[in-house]
Length: 161
Image 1 (cartoon, rainbow, N blue to C red):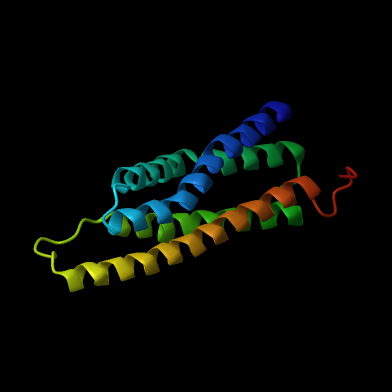
Image 2 (tube, helix red, strand yellow):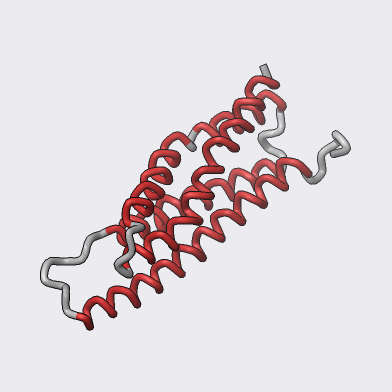
């Protein structure tokens, strides 16, 4: 049973978190191009939908991780507790900052905002928002990289890994 749980956990992490990491990383560039009048609006909207949909399915990753940890009897091990804390931080960052930031960047221009100065202001704000989202996405991806390292190295493990 442990091997099955671990397999589902690892597959879910790869197949769910991977697309979120890629789509969230690509989103700022496409959203910035769309705000500058480029044809990338459809791509940005698709990347946001991918992030949103996979976030919902992403709950499976910690659920199967906790089930695997319980099967192995390591739920109290510091490396697993640290991994769970980092997972919660990554999820909070995604839900509280990245997804809302993406949604905000996808909002259309208000009616009558065709003045050149307003367009320039919107483009400037879009670049700033895109940079902020890029930074947040980098932190999100870094959190997952640390979790992966903790899962592999497992400090204090007696398995010799």
